[in-house]
Image (cartoon, rainbow, N blue to C red; front, side, top):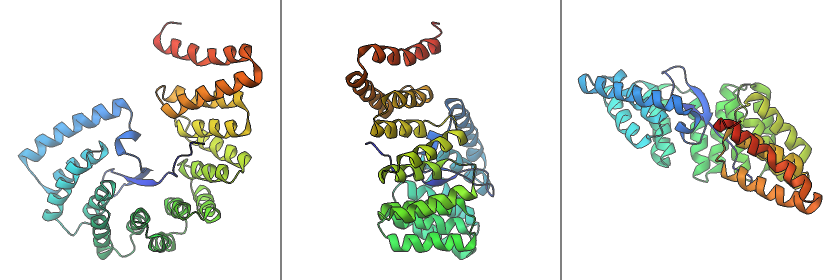
Length: 300
């Protein structure tokens, strides 16, 4: 089965003081094509502003925009310039560390997060980011300690519970991972990532009904998200329910027609369905996404 790695909450580069959370995957992947066009326009405007007046705020805003576009190397340059102007603002250290983390510069990112904690020793996000960084370095004991510190500061910190669960996942302590994910889902209904992660672990442990329930919850929380639909398809494949698997893969492909894992999974489900049910049912099932794609082109 093609299980994905658990999803990690990540600091979205929002206006300073209003940080939100998104997945660890490249920042630009969470924006629609229209939003990306707007970000590119914003970047051009900030380029002009910075050329005219390279103040701390202007450098930070351009760096934030670059990071949203996934251009972390360029963002680091502006974060460093902003840091040199005002090193007492914890946000520049936090965002610099985040960009360094995404570039794989883990030792440098740890230094940046430590700077945040020098300024504010009770800043939970810095502890949580240190935990993510330690986990990527394979320093799991320190990762658990950092996530735990964040949760001591805020026991209802859903992102911290999710990322603690991920650390236990990497340690192959799946029961502890589930505990982290379940606590995360208890404290937030805004983000589907803990439900997805719980579903992944349940499926790995053979708890398929629980996995389906978690993925279904995720689709309710974020209907436009493709991953939980794809993972539902994977579980149904494991259960031998090829008709439901195809339906789930189709839902994923409605959200991303070029989703390679869903395309491959659907093809495998159709082949398996043909062996079990014969060609008549196969043809009927195969018709559904063809009609969908045709309507998207305006042919029907």
